[in-house]
Image (cartoon, rainbow, N blue to C red; front, side):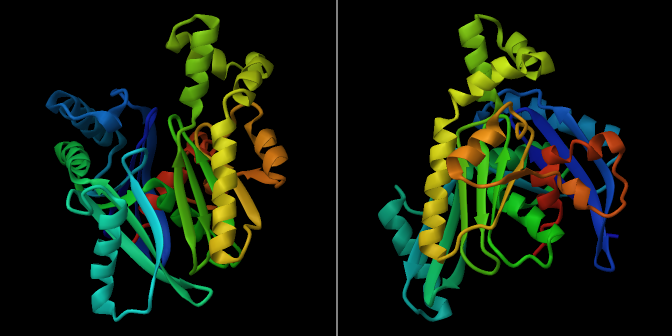
Length: 333
């Protein structure tokens, strides 16, 4: 039994899923979610911040009863480099050089200071490259956090790809393109995926925290009070107004992504899913539906997981775990 541990260290919560595969079936052994003690942890570089988060994570893993140590994590945000480009038909051994040459032209410093990977796929008879990279010094921070918690990081994925992987694992017979929006505390991961074809991934600077900040500013209350205000059901209509006035970037970026995907792939998504911890922001679903002229569905991936060791209170919050579940289902290669 080879245990894997999916670790999603988000801006608000840390999500953990431990599981294993047996005879082609995935079994979840431990699962949990806890508030992140380090604010803006993705910008954490000081040894003290790394030590605090690593120690906190170690204690939480112990409390959950996690026994595995092979970890899969992911990155997102402004430091992630995502680039799409076409290349001519080349022998396999020449593709890497072509990717490095392209990177020198569009990325300051090229790939020297990045941990990166790329995939090559054909669309409409043309060969495309999807390149993803992350600064080496930032990767080292993640590695240090996980290592100090007792985990061994094996794979560092990209949030948007992990969300897409979650969908692909659960919908094994899907054929038509899908658009998934994973709205978190700080960022929204946009994933538009064509099976065995073009994949478009983008991080958008929008999340529940944006609305909390705006409420804090306008109501002249502390961020903690603003967070409580945002989450109270009786404040739904008031919060909805804040959402409507602060989601222009989200709508615009999704619209641009959809047009880019259609131009590259020649297809439009036929399914639109909304997931993540902030997917139920008041009015956000209706705004997206009206502006994009599509039908959005709130997606809880755990509704599609076969009977497993998932406590009911966690299963009901499955939309928080879309990314983390995608990490768990990632193949260790």
